[in-house]
Length: 128
Image 1 (cartoon, rainbow, N blue to C red):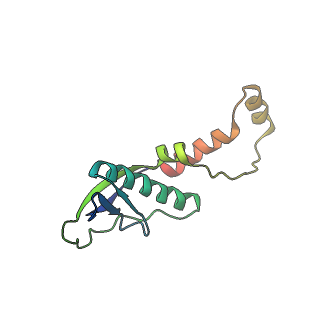
Image 2: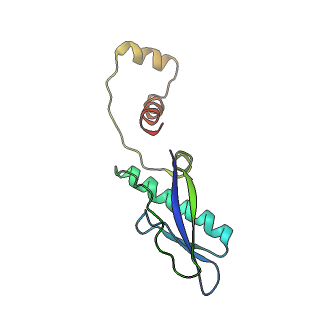
Image 3: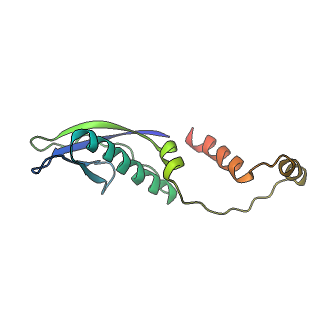
């Protein structure tokens, strides 16, 4: 899942930037310079979205750019939630499933990872 959000960058008095994502309540971070602030907001927003998805919530749509204070500016940020979840997602739930015995026999013979197959199929269905 790829998402795009508007981030608002506000210069800090002591240097660097404070960054918020208006569409993601409470998503705030900072960086010592612009490059670090960009990477930090991508990480913070990705974590925010991943947590919402893991908790069964929907992902909010982006919001219009709010009126900015003097010196502030906005920029779009791109999030690759699939890549972020693969690297940092840890929450998993156990599910019992029922499959035909003959499929189980073939799957075990071929050393298939049933959990991975189900995960891949569900991601294909809901994230594509």
